[in-house]
Image 1: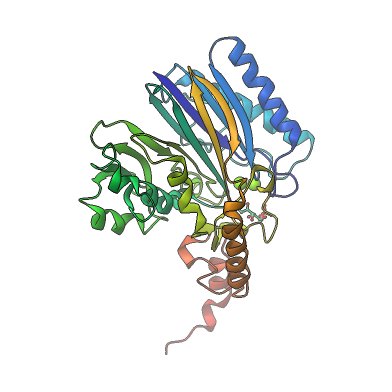
Image 2: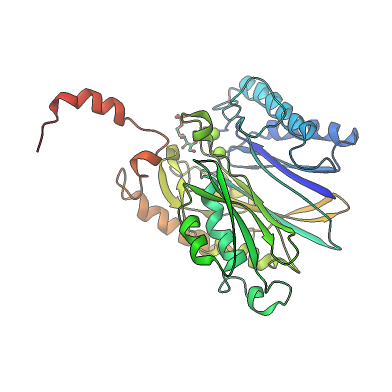
Length: 363
Ligand code: F6R
Ligand code: MG
Ligand code: MG
């Protein structure tokens, strides 16, 4: 069994919230290299998506392992120190606790982990997004694993024909439910279509029960009970053979679907699929971005990454995303560009209501 852990945090932006400083990435690589030499990690890569630092690690410690989580926490804390020295913006913003207590879940960082037997060939795509929230994966995961108009393999590949099971988390009530496709897609879509409340945590191959995909579902705003930034989630998807082909896994992103996030975590906007070098959201702190890192895993080694959205095949999606971004920006402070009142990460409503309280009269 090999475990793939993707653990990420925003520990400081360069410049503002737009990107990550190279020195932070370099220091994280040095830290993980020590753990690799010590034998804790089989392999690792450090990437960034916007202002989020992404630690991609393979090991044999299983999911929710204290040593792996402590290693990540230490890297984030050391990175925060460096971010403070460089006076990067929002240094340590996702580290919500001063002390590590066994697991980074609930402490601010986002976590997506899966343990599996490596197949004879193991293609994996790691999606990383910035300026959006956990439910952003609902739409593409549904398309990949349940929509035959996206994934023809569901119809014509015998190994996929029995469908997939979706584990959905209610991120407010902290409850979960598993629903099967294709038999329960109408029930499934009642939840998936409400991504601010329900998020797909994982997807399983129904016939074999093998893990197919896993996402990070933490909602930072709920964890902290106050605004601390958007989740900027990650999602790991296994591809080929009994799972959707790489092209079927990437296909949902040809539509820049609308997600919540963008400026001040308080707007709807299109999710733009971009190459690694273009994941620096600057236009009105956006529009929200997603990158896709492709790997072949070989005996625990990460062969890659390939920058999967670095393909002219996604140029139209990017152009379309810009069109949508311009259109939505014209709405300024009006919904549906601005999020509904109780979804915004920033609000002045309480102060305004107090100030104007005695000017309200009955109609
Ligand atoms: C969105 C985001 C940014 C900030 C904005 C204001 O997720 O991180 O859009 O919300 O730049 O940031 P502050 O309040 O730190 O000045
Ligand atoms: Mg930030
Ligand atoms: Mg971010």
